[in-house]
Length: 166
Image 1 (cartoon, rainbow, N blue to C red):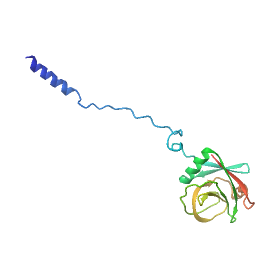
Image 2 (cartoon, rainbow, N blue to C red):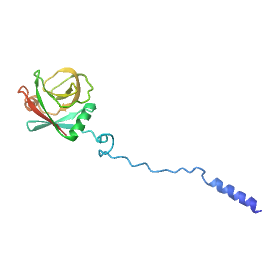
Image 3 (cartoon, rainbow, N blue to C red):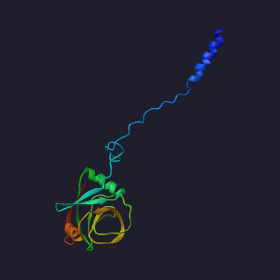
Image 4 (cartoon, rainbow, N blue to C red):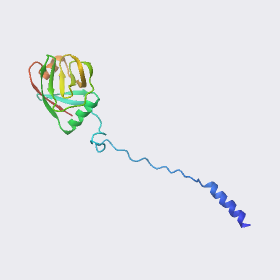
């Protein structure tokens, strides 16, 4: 008499219990962009929109492109500013050795005044005129008039010291 009741009770209990309960665990905390992750410590850092270009104590912002060269340049600038010498070439640019190599993604470019270009992977070219060549674009100086840009770069006046910084 108790046996049929016991069997019914066990059958009822087995029907009400989920045999494979689903347990939802919270998502693991996401790493914040604080520079403490990745292989070089900079993988999670946001890419800035601009870098600063300084000549003779005056600075201009440079709106940078997003490419491998600018990422490598920004990573270097996070460590320290970079200063190099640039000299006139061809009556339309100041060019100087950066002192390091950056990755290139060269393409045929027709430059305009204000363009900041990587040439041969290790030289930065600051244009105050135009040219067409295979370059990697770094960015564009934000300047007023063409005469102001030429004055800033001391166009045609020989060697200048250029500092790149964040």
